[in-house]
View 1 (cartoon, chains in turn red, brown):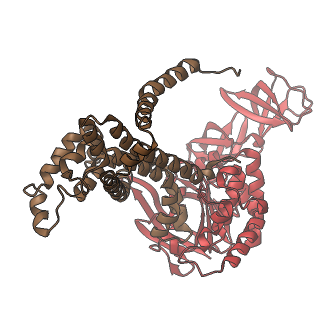
View 2: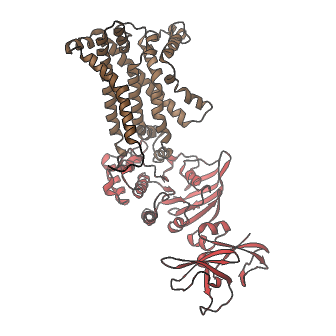
View 3: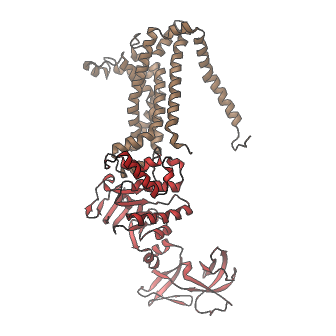
Length: 345
Length: 273
């Protein structure tokens, strides 16, 4: 089911949560709404679900105008941030809840039981049907919540911070697993997260929101390689910001000259990620070459690399070098910039 | 013995036990001994006398009716207090406790004045053929008045803690508002409602001050058990008073024990294993 949002606006009291957002999600796509808290991503998701209604604009499911259709008739599966499992019902009864409503197509008890079994198998919890939600782990609750949402055969699956409350290892496993389920069922899926790693890992397309507006959208590759603003650059991962001045399409930093074609003359910020920097220590036999003169302030040894904290003209920067590199605090050397993004300051 | 972080367990335990023994257990024991001194035959004759039986019927029937009324109205009141923001909400919230704070005799006199044939409510209801003062209906109203806070105050905190996402989850799964209420909200409130009901019922069984002014106190029709106990005391029939009182005591105790059991069953979904 294709979803279209057309100039959607939502205001709470005086707070404008969503500003004129237009977005289309293709049938079968897995899309992440990524943004910091207060960016309007959850409000947007709740409007798609029919748990909130926009003040202006239109939401279409396929060709149908769904803007005013209440949640119970919208045919969406919603997975809540803290799962919202019914604590007084067993796992199996939680999953069967949506099949036992007056609206649901009449099914015999045997049919419902069979469908619950099938869903329990899908979420790999076959033996836990009789447990209560308080008796299973957070990751298991998450999967029950998903099975419950899938039980009503939704046209669209919506997940609000699906892995927010889980610890790092469980998150990683569940992410891969959700990706597999999506591949198997092919349901159009929209999820909200503030974790860029989660969004990039899971989604076909990432929609980045800031203060109720979409600032950039695209494939994980497009948004990470071509961030269109300082906000997106910073939000997607560790980054260093260096002040400089653009002049005639060039930015000079130390004795490096960076290409700034198309930027107006004036102050700019140069953004580099740790992986965009390369270390050339003095006396390492490397060509000294052009670069930023820097001093190592600290070396942090990590399993796959050595992280150098260096200082350049008062800026603290970090970068990784190979585990074999001999370097110590106090060493001087040069930083090469392999890639950078430059935005007007 | 395990090392405890908080000091003072022996002290606090000792104080509580002493208090419970002196203030709660001792008077009840005295009552039981007094009643027991009658001997089985005399005891049975007193507690099964026609006037006593009639008083049980009136008391229990009226307490049940008052509790049923409080169930509906108390639940609605708790719902409104928790779910809506309106001017005067805090005032209403404070007013709920008034029946606890007011001397029950004051409540009884106020209700009687209102519902007596010439009173504000009475002169409207009387022409319609509805007699409240000096009838069982009056007893029910007095009981409902004094025990209303129990249901509101047991349900209110549970309702406040109820995650709104649970109701949204119900709706998103296609349930109607009514289904969400009966299949999600009500079952989760049930243990608290049950606790409130049992307290409200127990209080109504024992209520005295508010009722005697409005009840008319006709033996066999509007005489409650607590009043019969009082009458026997005034007649210096201490053993008979104790015997009839023990019936109230046993009823209340059995009822509280049963609701406790039901409640534990209802909450078994919270057990960890």
